[in-house]
Amino acid sequence: GAAMAYPNTRRASFVQILVLLLFIGILRNVFFTDYRSVEINYLRAAGKTEEEISKLIPKTPAEVAEERRSKLSEVGQLKKDVEELKKEVKELREKVFPDEKKEGEKVDEEKKEAEDTAPISADVDAKEKMAR
Image (cartoon, rainbow, N blue to C red; front, side):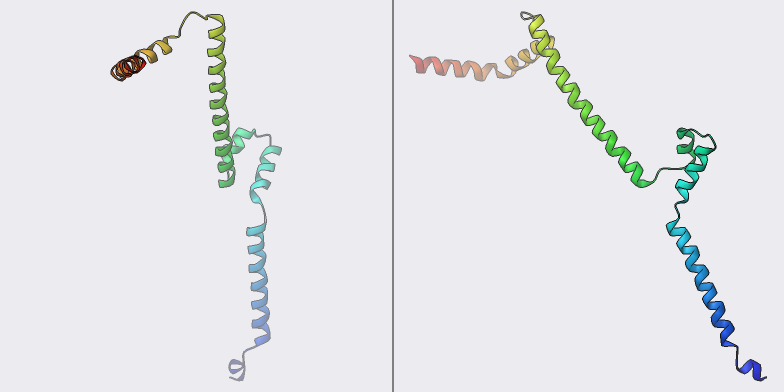
């Protein structure tokens, strides 16, 4: 009986300290070891291509966001380039074919004439009366 009444606290505290150290070591490895880059380097060393690696290891949310931003900036730059090229083509057509109008301009002029015929004629009549 006396041994049961007084447990060995030295052994219990030693085991608790070991369990705590083991737990801290595991947490440190989980949070601070970059297993992803280790795996990527291993796959590269094994001769896998970047496409195969990207299929096996998914991208991080930060990499996905960066990829989206770069695609959006590329699309925006392409849109600007297209607008600049349209202006240059228009200028070149005007220089090469100064007498011809583009079909788009004819359609735009017809729309404007159809929409604005009544107000234009009223404005012209008013201006003529004022001029007299």
